[in-house]
Image 1 (tube, rainbow, N blue to C red):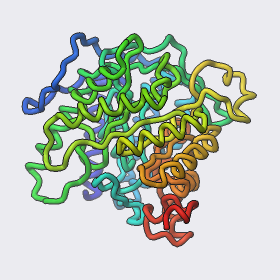
Image 2: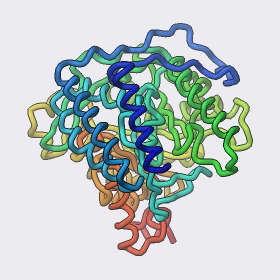
Image 3: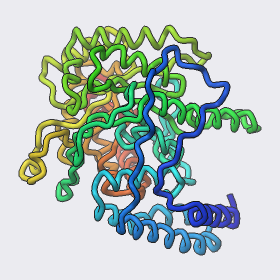
Length: 467
């Protein structure tokens, strides 16, 4: 794209915001494409999407600041090359991001999702360093840094979030029936420690709404592929970048297996990989599904449901399980045994913790019920990651998640056995500027230690296992 074309696109975006209202307003989901496959099972009840309340004065100030940056960016883009402008745009978000800290934590999160959904976030135009590319499950990731589930619970902003430069984005957790989750307030910032405590409880608009959104994106992607003269596939089913779908169960459900099967039937056709979430601490009884017998039965039921569907030549999406960091050695041994015996495609390590690692334990809000994420979780989750890599002998793909705030953190996860890495809380505190910085730092770490690829560094701390 030329500088003049970029400037024109910038002005159109700004004009749309001014003519059609605030970008923070929730929008109705796009209709599913006529040709999209129908789910083998349907959901009987559908609730309307949860509406975002009108922004307070701080929200209007934030909108004004974003528009001000748009005007400045429009002037700047016409005088510089695209790569330089892209770097400036990501850097400029550091001026806006602190304003989000002035807002209620959950409202700030809703604004961030809406901004990404409406294109009011920077879009990465610069190619990733080749050293970051990696192939996993037959899918090509341009970089191993992904956005964890919990940020875009209802698949409202997939395109915008992938556009930030993530190698993959995971939406959800998605429950079969819509549910509000736990009472508010339910998100608490521990700013001094770069941490968050949440007890959201799988607040979700439900499978039907999410399926419609993903179906519309899928249809758009297929149309672009048909009209494109290029034979090169630019990513996963959602377009450039890889899309994961994280499945949850309803709080009042008496049959967890049926809930996850329903998610597979409705959403797997749009996913590059699927995740069974059995580790959120905010849904009563959910973590009991991590026991050997329960997990073995659940994984088999979900695998059977996936495999009974008809798939194109690229096959069904890989199936992963997301586990907790608060597990005993026996629990880890049981999970590793199930993963190996069932030929599970991967494990995500880990979810939030019910413990309060120091120094966050001294914070007044640390006593709030819920799971803790962010910097204090790094050591605990990385130790579980290392343990699981050893127990599975490096034979199961692991995604490292928990406390990642820098490229060095991501590198430590990879050396500890992670093939891919996810973050979430760091994005809430650092904003979009964090993403290119982490990727650049990770590339520097790999090159510093003589690795020619991410794959070479996976499990590097365990040389006997890799031999």
